[in-house]
Length: 279
Image (cartoon, rainbow, N blue to C red; front, side, top):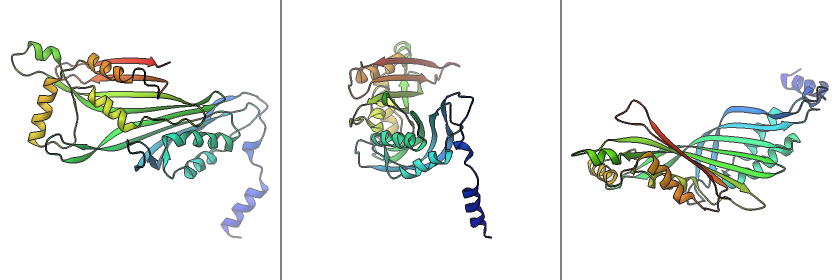
């Protein structure tokens, strides 16, 4: 008998253990898979919503499990990813989670997708274009209360110290910094998320002393150095600059901003956080 025939016979003769009842009757909040690396086609991350990009994503997928059921069908989680992998978008995650829960006959479903997305950076004077990676994530939850989605992005920036500029006869210390912005959306009905990752990156970079660039020629370095000198920012300034832009924006439910300065003249770093709901 061929191996494939043996496998078919095994599948037809043996009970699916996962479908057995469980007399312990202990419900599980989340059960699923994590650390799944998978190629993904993303759409709608840029201001031009038609643009797609191939990324390597890391998935965490889970559903709830009734106390009377022994287990879930793990393979169906990955099958759902396969079926939705043609241009998965931020606004398509609601259907993705609905499908995930339906296949498992679950009430709740959860997903976290981490990935690097490349945006094209244009050097300020030379105009040289080069790709720069930004660490991003989508987190979503589907239950009887509706659908919630959080999109997050980590943005590297440059900050120049206002105090150092004030007290120094020449120059001022500056450092590379990072900005983390997370926006929580609560989608109802057919409403769509109207904030792209590219827009969030722009908000973060505009809140600092200067953006960062992969490639800079000498004329670009001069421009970046002087521009940052003309716009000194404490870590407190950066987080407040961003919060002012995000305040009152009806396109999301709440936000969190975290900024870290990797100090160039101290052995420690500085950070600031603002969390706020728009409702």
